[in-house]
Image (tube, rainbow, N blue to C red; front, side, top):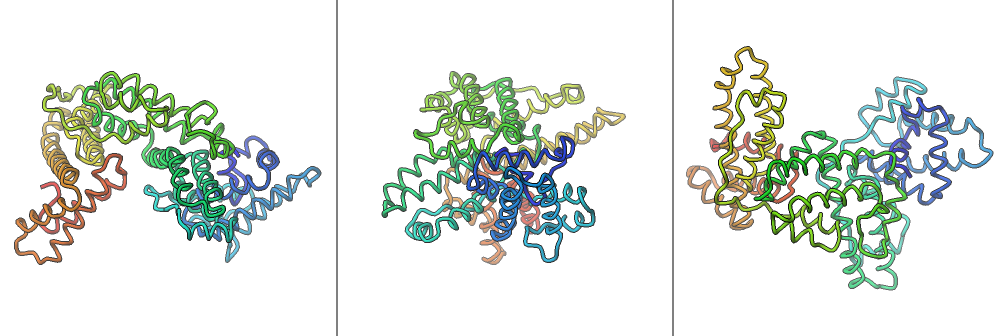
Length: 508
């Protein structure tokens, strides 16, 4: 089922682009998919799509939506059905969603939509969706209790897993989520049969690990893309590549960051070629998952991007060379993605900070990105959120001063103060993460306790313990490779505000 169809096929079964292509467009799309997929796969796709769109809905609410979707398809899609059936039923469905009480997912915007009528109401309801999560929390089960639940009610177990998994990974491309969710269910079917358990689970989990990891990576990438946009995603990749390769030039990193942001943009926006059937077809591969054209456009784009990384960096850095010698492109990409930050090289050539003229020229953004690249490769342990903060602060100053009557005076006033604050935060972030990585969790907490006790000799133990837990939580969340930058940006802001109340600001 097309991702566009899956997304539109909720509550209203109608969308704005359908209006432009004719009243019967969505009926033909939905009925075509219902006939080609069959009822069971169609229903599976509806569970995945509705769970993704309404991630805060209860399981029962999602099943109510799915039941309505399937019912309309069954009633209106057979040969000889009333041509007006689809229109009438979808309108009735939108009206039922405005009833009180409604059996469908709750949303703060529903009340406003229900003030409208007819097509306007349906179009309004079609745009509603719940906010997505940056950090999934759902844990798949691989034990006797899970097998017992599966064998007692395989359909209920299947539906609930599709619901839980899809709502947690609601940003990842539909084919990837579908394939990952279905491989788990296929594993349960194979390993719970006749008590196969143990060895069967071990082998199947190893077999599907690349796909589950890809789901996590693509979910994070699409979440950030949808929240931050293409340019900020490019910036994130500049930071990542700069901190993993000591030999890469800015030109290397910029080219790869642009390619990565293009890949993410295409994959996360794909509503024409990414099919639900692609996900089903790769859900049970006969061999470990490879990235080929037959894997679908999202996975093939990742293969091409991996090739560009290897062509650019494998001859410059041994760690990239080792990753690029992996058994296939997917394994190579996952290896590259998991590479640790490099230890800061002992010597790096001096770099020229961008001048006021550079920053205010038509290439000002490029100059700022180059500056961030040089800063990032010299402070490899600091959280990515800190570099993002640096860029945003610099961008604000550039925007303000380049439009000022006296540009030179503006920069002279604002740059020194901003640089002092920014690099103080950067040094503290680097120190925190370096200690966390080298001392590990227990040693890090002991070191924090000693430091806080020296700084706050009069503070009661509960205050010290609270500060230790707060800083330890920040470090454990935001210092590891590929930590969530949006979540960490908020945590750092909170940490600055909280610790300042104790007279030990994070940046001092």
